[in-house]
Figure 1 (cartoon, helix red, strand yellow):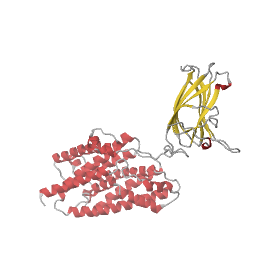
Figure 2 (figure 1 turned 30 degrees about the vertical axis):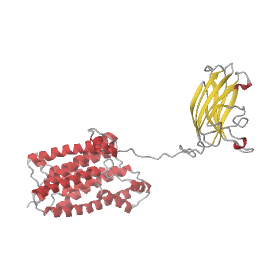
Figure 3 (figure 1 turned 120 degrees about the vertical axis):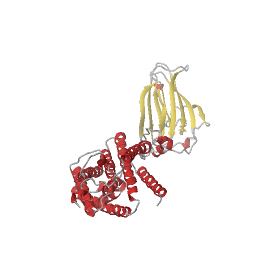
Figure 4 (figure 1 turned 45 degrees about the vertical axis):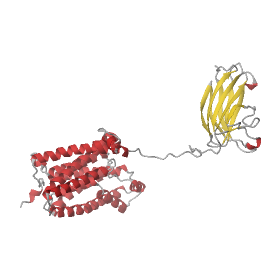
Length: 236
Length: 228
């Protein structure tokens, strides 16, 4: 493949990523809305399967969570490592999802989502060898687990925006969390499959830089739109 | 191969410092530009760079719509099956100690019919009155024997003049009770425009047989049996 061909393709990928970022409804980044919100508000008592579905749907369509996952597994070649980091991430977000809702901790969803955007840029910067360049060494397990905690708060704020009935809350919450993990597994399998195929191509190293540069940009846009929302709309 | 190597930073890329600076600097700049120039105008109607207006993206922003529900029988829009009319009447009121100091004048209106009104109290020589006139702006249905009568009170006050609008809430007669409080006879010059019918002299609402000074189109006073 010639240099012209690959740079054209990089441009296409860049354009698609930016278009996707701009088409995303910024103010309500993957909030649970419409008929789903109405369903949750109307639910009294345990109703595990629908909540599981909502959790899975939220994860599969939550592009900020997915971009972070993409960054995390970008350079993980061994299945063992993939499982370790994904488990750390899951442990982190399950903890704060449950604690956040049950203890009714109110954090601005704009600020939480802004930090999630920062986590995407953080991981991209790390993949690019940025921290090593700066002479900073951060334990990756700590970073992924820590950002997992923040992502969990993001999930919690979305659920708290809905009027959850206390009757059956714990059961529904656990079901939602199981759904999140299932959704994550589905999304992860797809990302991993594509990544594995991609890594076998000769142009991968060159694209890897471009892809992480785009990931960095996407994180900046995600964080920026949430900060704009926080300062314009206020405590969301 | 040591087990621990994968837990230290996993970065596999060794990007040149210049490239790294380009990627992070460019990413921050482009990201900020996208947020300020596109997302903020389109999502929040805030346009710090003016790019939203230039690109038309700001037009994507629209306030959320909520449909207003009118109260029962209070549809704000009405098509009229009669042409609009304009009428001027002069209502004579005797001096305050005369029995003729107070009288009523009303218009026949169907629900939703609207009129604009404007009245002023004048002395017999045409100069404005200085003693406020007591008025009671109200409406009621024309009840047949044994039926209840619905009454609506619109405004009750004292004034030298007033103007405004009325949309009739029900089928009936709607208008004013005026009471002169000055020691000399006065007249109320009342102008109305809109959708209404004049009450023929002698009928309820025009018991004092007041004839309009002018009415357009043509005198709209109805035949006696058209009322009710």
